[in-house]
Length: 397
Image (tube, rainbow, N blue to C red; front, side, top):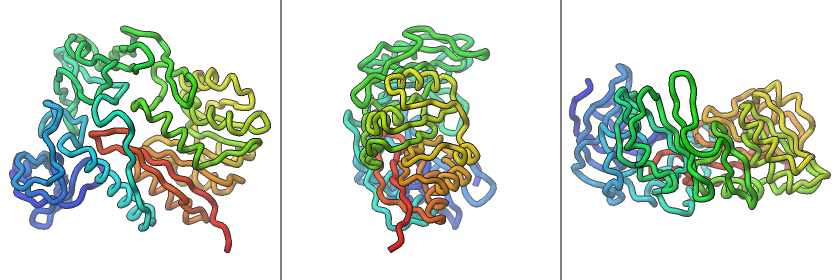
């Protein structure tokens, strides 16, 4: 197969990454803009030279009942690559994501019998994203990149952007010499606009540090520090972590990859002054924010360090762990170090089901078990899904 070839294929199951799997003459084709069970005409966009090719469904010959008209005019083959499922009903999107999580847990995690339901967050599938990063082309026009490409698609608006961002006003401007433009904001705070250039970033509009509201209080989140982009995400995830871990007064907690201290903060309130919480984070901006956010609970400390197996092995004794690693996961060394400690339970917050599955395989192989899993649709219209897993030591019968 070569790019540009047109093939007629029957679409198989959804796969991790926002595409579906089809076969043509024995060769796998990863197809975007399609749905399982559809008969489509695919234009090949990339051929690996190995066992698979990639393509876009450019004509729907037999449509799935879950197919809808994309609400975004810039969505579709050869256009903006930011969303994967604009052509899918909201309920069907969640079902596809649940299938992917289950498949990854079974295939990579060795856990074939985990029932997964992806829960809807309030607000609907549009207008939820409180931070947008736009690329800028050589003509100074802001937009989003095509799928698997550096090419910038100039757009007039983004339907998943939160209304407070007023993204059309930024997209309508020219940004000569910029590489990107970032907007952040919410209903609770003014918009911030930052320009990213070759030699760094500069603030164009808004305060240098934002305030976010979650878990019944305010949190400082400076530019560059991580905060979930769905307005309801911080509340939902922190409540889920508390519910799963059920921290008791006096318990000792560790929040690994702790960011600005969200989970550390809610754990500190739960365990009280008789307990202790350590927030471990490598990013200097987030560490500074976490120190401010945890200042009212002096039994909560912040440590700037990269999370690795050696660090975990030398941590003070602890009862509970929140593990919120980057997309690559925590990795074998961290999981094995945690398993060797005194911890009674781990709440693993995962933005990638494949990484979660690999880490669960490591933990279950050394005497731990998955007790509970919840999945949340924090990123409607995309293939991304957030999971929270409760992991505990196996008990002998």
